[in-house]
Amino acid sequence: MKEKIGRFMAGRYGNDKLNQFMMAVFLGCAVLNLFVRNAYVSTVLNSWECLLILLVYIRMFSRNISKRYAENQKYLALENRLRRFFGQKRYLMQQRKEYHIYKCPGCKQKIRIPRGKGKISIRCPKCGEEFIKNS
Image (cartoon, rainbow, N blue to C red; front, side):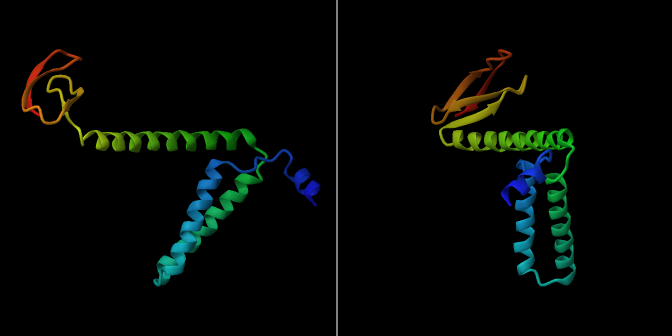
């Protein structure tokens, strides 16, 4: 039986990160559908579930490997952009405990100043403009 499945899947795309994401969304819709009492919302969730599972199987059994690979690369690029964006926001929130973060009025460069130093004169390292802020 294992050999038959192996022969069937030979030359087909298989599973990737985009398929895994779509399966996670499918499972989320299925769990959400258990708690929804509205018939219209339940119908919409059912249609989304059917669409997602159909797309997963179409992508998994596709023989157009280059197209599926390109779709997965676009998804990975988008995921990477989102991870970087939220990672930067998390890093800034961690830095705000010990530092004030100001923008230079001239060039909008972000400048990190330690807290608790009183009023200080800040010189922008990028454009050289000086401004006074409270730390």
